Image (cartoon, rainbow, N blue to C red; front, side, top):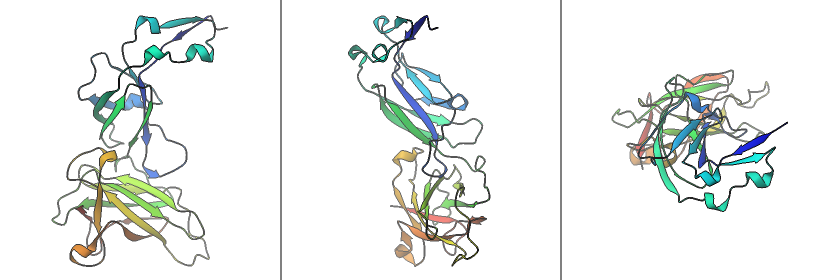
Length: 258
């Protein structure tokens, strides 16, 4: 029997989501208790409460909004009162994984309307595991050999007679990346080819670690000069193998900022 219910209203909720590898399907939350979050200039009364499902943004609640309901609370009791509205406030900072399984990232959002914010985290090379479907490794860099950190790679693979599979990975501070192809179906015995066609696009910038704010970059493919750099390139994907993803004639994936 429920004797009483304490009703409080949080400001917002951040869900940290593992966005690496195959896209689509159910969200894969990253437990917030293992993350380190640093805010730039947070409100003085803001408190972060870390849960397995995410991080609660908690601001000082007026006494009149702290209610105790006798017995079980009804849906009407749980409804947010109009006086709980507060002005939107900007929130920016950085999240990092001390264990090194996920790459650090910047983030910025507008909080204050009790909204849920889903922020993507990408696995580091250390935190990426390859299964039976194989994967891709490589390093993003400029033509002069300068590493391009935090580049975001999106790969679409289209097996014959199947819907496309989308995969994502992010390079680390040294430009190194590992892209898992988990869930990519294996070749059948009577497959007409030994590889699947894939299309790669990359987002990158000279600086900045917010994957949501990265602009499109150009990737070096076939051709010469400026014509070699394209907004997307085609790649052959051999399921079940671990291969290096690189520009033609190079050991690395060569980028140019648009």
